[in-house]
Image (cartoon, one colour):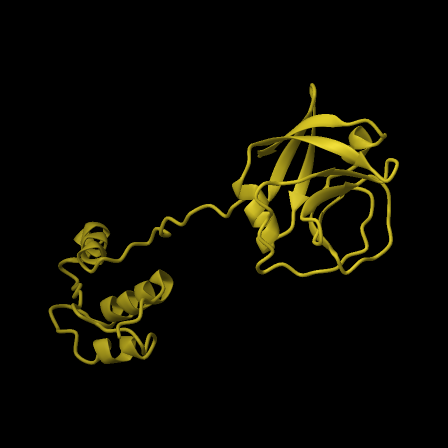
Length: 199
């Protein structure tokens, strides 16, 4: 199997070939020496630069690389999925950072999402019930929530945002945390409509 090799090593091999040759002499053993730099690579087509062709090096090397399907540019890669979200309450917006686990990714995939947060336990939590329940695959169980933690209560399947610190529970699953002092906006015992959005 052909192994792709880094452009810096390949260019070093090219430089080795180019500088090893002089006048009109051939490549000789330079190919073999260059191959030691990238032993897993397959040299399909060599480039010979002699003293009479060095003036065209700036165009010949890029053309040669292109003919081999190589490029000095990094391949395009999809952007990493952001775990940052906005929580909009009325005219105000706070932010939160989700965990990198299965339940949090499922929650993120459902955004934007508008829900009503209901008070639970006299201002301790704001809760809502996602429908369907969030997937708990690839999600560690158990946490000791602090104010601002976004969790799932596994037995009921509800999302619970803690407005104050609470005791550890193996039934609570952390999926995120509200940034800075944003939890202050959710504190109190009244219900509130909120909108969760990706950043």
